[in-house]
Amino acid sequence: MRKTAPDIRRDGNDEPGQVKEAARRVPSPLTSKSFLAAGAALFGAGGVWLTSPEEGSAASLLSPYAPAIMTLAGSFLGGFLIGWGARRALRTTAIIGGVVLVLFFLLAKIGVDGSAIEQWVHTSLDWLGENLDAAQKYLTALLPSAAAAGTGTFLGYRRKRR
Image 1 (cartoon, rainbow, N blue to C red):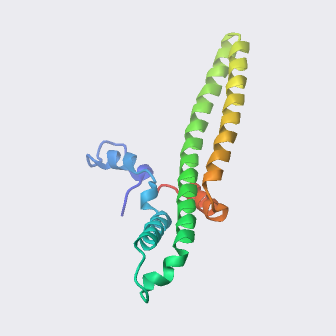
Image 2 (image 1 turned 90 degrees about the horizontal axis):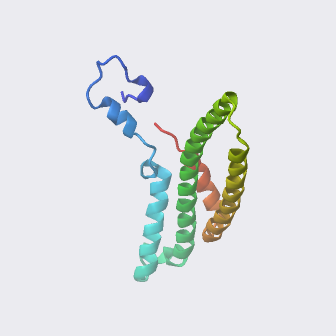
Image 3 (image 1 turned 90 degrees about the vertical axis):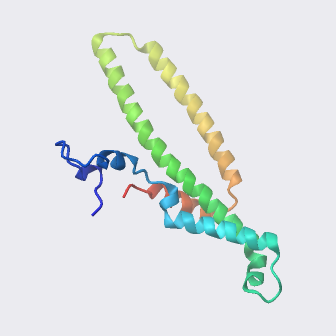
């Protein structure tokens, strides 16, 4: 049975590599079957499209559909990576935001005037919001198939540790 991070005992009787192994388990996109299948479809369709298979072969039947398959698979892969990255970024941002809020609370309890810090935070958040909107529009324009990208984003965001 595979041990996950909560299953590892902290009493010093662990095997030497168990803690390091548990820390290394990151839900990589390369371990997702849907990601690998979309990658195989992308490269397979690209191979069929670029090689122009001979008439009568099974690959020649797929040749007219190869650009569409590449578009869908590429959009799915892009959406998957965006969702996977968003999940990781959201978790990290939540942790950093919590630490910053506790720090501001402690500074306010001590009596430090936080109006300059508050103004800086509001300015930074406005700037971040504008740039994230621009980045979202740019990335959306790069993804030609919204349905495949949306499915990939959902599955990539849902990707968890095992």
